[in-house]
Length: 309
Image (cartoon, rainbow, N blue to C red):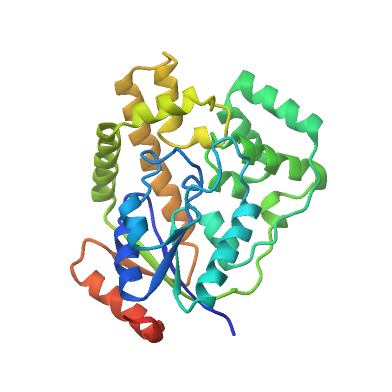
């Protein structure tokens, strides 16, 4: 039989963390992060990680597992997340997969089989040189021409994954998106999606960025630079880190960096919603409506009655 899995998704800043902590406390749950940037150590403020106190209260998995210079992949995430989920299930607890990285989450839940195409060092170096000269946006546009579906789900600054998708296309003549195959759902799942009116979400995003600045995002990025982590790393392309590094390198003002983070995060939230809207299993709830919390709890209780505390 397929084991149970509760999945909580939605755009950044919508309230996934608060809901996951509440449900984990009510349903003997443990949380598996579905965030592609929370896997990295030393990146706490900009990725909005849960506090050490919250992690002490509710076990969390796949947070702080690799250093920022580790070339972390979807395949690696898929394997580690499944191992964590199955370990939680074996111990009689409810795994709760929570996050906003759609590809990572669906790689776990729907079993994306990822193309095993050999690397092409010559092409990879050529594409890196092109991006260095013309910029990441132009590289992304190259991918958009041959594989618009993959381009739509990748941030233009995600150079490593854009290059990998171009490498796959060059090696096979087939877009990366068409080589990905999905198997049957791996778990007995309940999907919860959180949303709110766009204007309110954008206000929350802006406030969150201001809070990150107040908590010391600039100092966090300085510390990363002092450890030798540079802007070409995938981890340092994360929203917040790239812009602050540009500020520290004297390319833009702090005010321009903050505005760029807010603008980029708003665009990112829009892409997240577009991704998750394509998943028919999701039960959507407007977190602004007072009745949503009770409705979510009742839905979870009906699906996973054996786990209720």
